[in-house]
Amino acid sequence: MKELHDYADVFREYFSNEDSLLTYDDYVGRIFNISNVLEVSTFHPYLLQQLYHLKNGSIEEEDIRSRFFVLEKYIVLNAICKGSTKNYNNECLQLVDEKKTPQDVLESCQYISEGNFVNGLRRMTTNKLPTLLLFWVELYRRNLLNVDIKILKLNIICCKQKVSIRFCIRHMKDFIIRRRLQIKNLSSC
Image (spheres, one colour):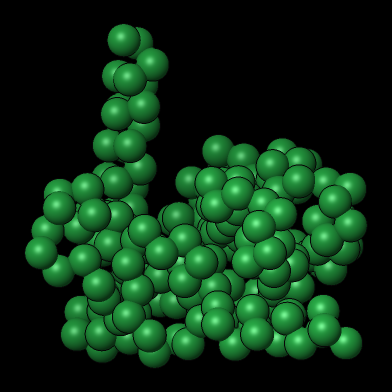
């Protein structure tokens, strides 16, 4: 009964409110925001379990940060690549049972590929995903440039910018190209 109570405390403490202010460094808020916007609550039991272990000290914060980042990457890439979500229940169970890591889940996804990624960026049919991507790109940019305002609300970006899908795709492609060049330059050093 105590364990159930402790899980309830973790749930109340961490589960994101969609209207809350977010920063790029808030990896917990980021994964919950992304899963909420993309309507992927399937991984919440795994997230809750990891946060419970963090609160009890049985996992290091850096470990949970990297696991959440990989899971976030998987969810976003799968959404962009128009991958199936049919396996999410099974994958969550394997994550909770520690039969797989988030990296294993990401690497085993057959939908995530360079071609599907490019086609997915070109063929976005709603503003939901581009708006989410631009929101987090903007927070990432503000974090990198050490701008004064590093906290934003997703709905402020949505309402004030009314970004077209073509603009979002162009902006995302430019961002991805710049990131690839940065990574390539770092690896050549």
